[in-house]
Length: 191
Ligand code: GRF
Image 1 (cartoon, protein in one colour):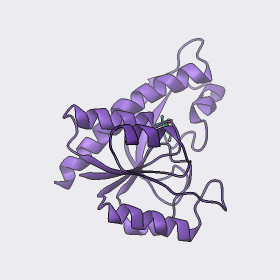
Image 2 (cartoon, rainbow, N blue to C red; image 1 turned 90 degrees about the vertical axis):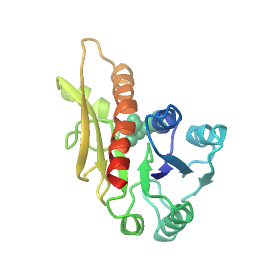
Image 3 (tube, rainbow, N blue to C red; image 1 turned 45 degrees about the vertical axis):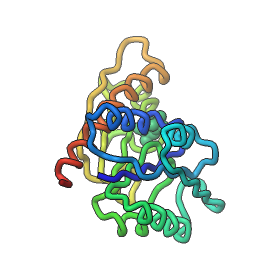
Image 4 (cartoon, rainbow, N blue to C red; image 1 turned 180 degrees about the vertical axis):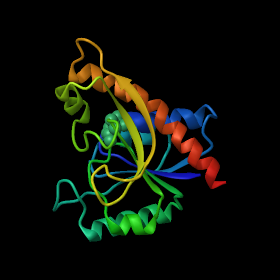
């Protein structure tokens, strides 16, 4: 399975996917890593691993893409012959151009047990709501924000004295197991 990764941040989930591939736990290749943020950590990680990178800047909007830029994104992913588009901390909503070009082939990871706590800083939302447990979710992407069909989830309990930072770190540790394992499952089904 040929993966295209999209990310805006440090890329720790991409790093976990890469480690799973390198250790033979995941039969996949990362064909390209694309970011909307020049100099993002995820691009450095990719370059260090010898993986091609592409920076696609959106000058007009903060949290979505103009259709022309999204069409360019599709062209880059298609040129890399990607089977699955993996959003790993990509901070923009994607729409028709991408979703039509890759039907049921775009997945995302979100730091809550969806449908609870969609949107930004979901760990902080969970802490402020006083829930007993939260977690992370891998889901297919649709044109909403964190609304697509759920593929798999891992629960993370809150513990006494949790801060947003401590809770976020535990959720991320769970993400680093969940995301490679879901991609492994999809790769098996893709064979
Ligand atoms: C993850 O926590 C993920 O749930 C959210 O964005 C974050 C990306 O982190 N969608 P990283 O760049 O993979 O470290």
